[in-house]
Length: 110
Length: 115
Image 1 (tube, each protein chain N blue to C red):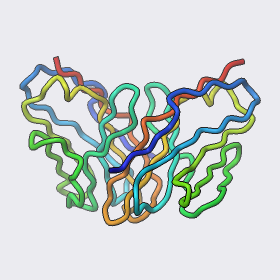
Image 2 (image 1 turned 30 degrees about the vertical axis):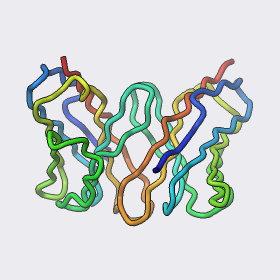
Image 3 (image 1 turned 90 degrees about the vertical axis):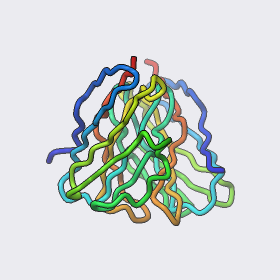
């Protein structure tokens, strides 16, 4: 089977750092992507890891370890506007299907 | 430039009716995806188009669902004999190509409610 597991909710305070984990059970995928979705909005792309290691894009970083079937999204200097749902996703090799996790709802408090 | 657009934004229908949902992808994007999303869940893959052809329709739940993209741009998702369980937000996304990884650009979705 194919599945990605994420915590359902995370709460953090403004200015802090938060890590959202994603563990997966799927074989043969191109890489791990992260998307952000505000309530009522469309998912928007944040980051992609094709290879193991850390990718940094401004306040957001993402990490992948294929040997551990694990990745995470790191958000630094949290702002109120970061309150949203965050999804990890993989695209399997040999096809075009993209599989999304159920999402982690991040609440940023003042 | 213009992003992905979807119409209608909301659709309310009665059980058993037929509905069509439209997606206008970003100009020049050859890859187009349809997903549906239920409350509190991630997008669930339905079908993928590369150009005019459906290259992967493994996510369509049953034969009531069908999608076309006759000219390789606009796509229509068609649902026959709608059921209450079809109620969800239907999302469309496009990317430059569908190979390996390309950032997917999502539309705002169509919220379908089947009464």
